[in-house]
Amino acid sequence: MHVYACGVAVVHVEEHQQVGSLTELAVWRYRSYPTNRSWAGQRLARLLEQHRADEPAGVSPDPEYVLSVYELREHAWSGPGLATALQLLTTPSVLVNRQDPTAAVPLGEGVEEAKFHDGWSHSEALAFDGGASHGVAGWSGIAYHPQPNERALTMSQILALELDVQALWALSSHILHTIEDGRDPVMPERYGWRFLRGAYVRLTTARPTESAQHRVMREAILATSELPDRLRAAQEALRESNP
Image (cartoon, rainbow, N blue to C red):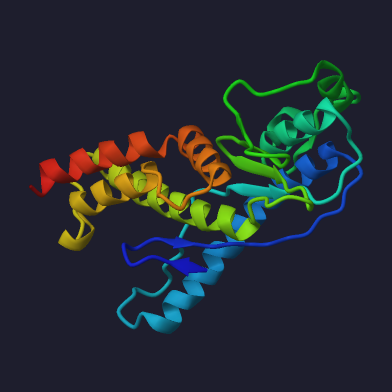
C-alpha cells in the first residue's frame, strides 16, 4: 500500500496468471474487480482503526477504481498477432458480457478469434514502444511485452509512473466531485493549487535523462488517463476557492 501525504492511498496487488486464451483472462479480470476493491477497502479500514485513534468507528473506505497493468511474459503469437493481443489485454471489455457486474461471462464463441482475424485495435488505446518491446495504454489498463534481448522498460518503471498517476487522478477526482456536490473544495495549503501545478509540470515535462521508451510510455499513459486535463481543472477550482 502506497500512502501519499496529500491524503490518497493506492493499493498495488500483484498476481500471476497463466491462461489458455485472452477471453479467459478477461473474465478473470472482471470477476476479480469487485473482490479486489472490497479487499482493499477492508484492509484500509483495519489500518485506519489501528493507527488513527481519532477516526470514527465503523469507517469503511470505498476504493473507486481498479487499473490493470499487464506484463506479457510468454506468448504464442507471431507477427501482427502480438499487437492485437496487447490491444485486447489493455481493453478486455470487448471480450466479456458485463451485464451482471458480479458474474462476467465470455461475450460469445469465436469473438476472440474474430478480433485476431481482423487485427482489432481500440480507437482510444495508444501503442508505445521505443525498440523491439511494445506496449499499449488505455483508459483502464496497460499492457507491455518486454523483449529479453534489449534494454526494455522494467515493471518497476511502469508501476512507479502509474502509482503517481493514479494517486493524482484520485486527488483531482476528489476535488472535482466536491464541486459537483455543490461544495467548495478545501485542501491544506501545502497540497493546494500550487501543489497540483507542480505535479502537472513534473508529469508533462521530459527530463534530460529520460529514455525514449519512458517518454513515449509517459505520454501515452497521460493521454489515455486524461489526467492533465483533470489536474488543470482541479487546480483552477482550488485557486478560486483558496486564492
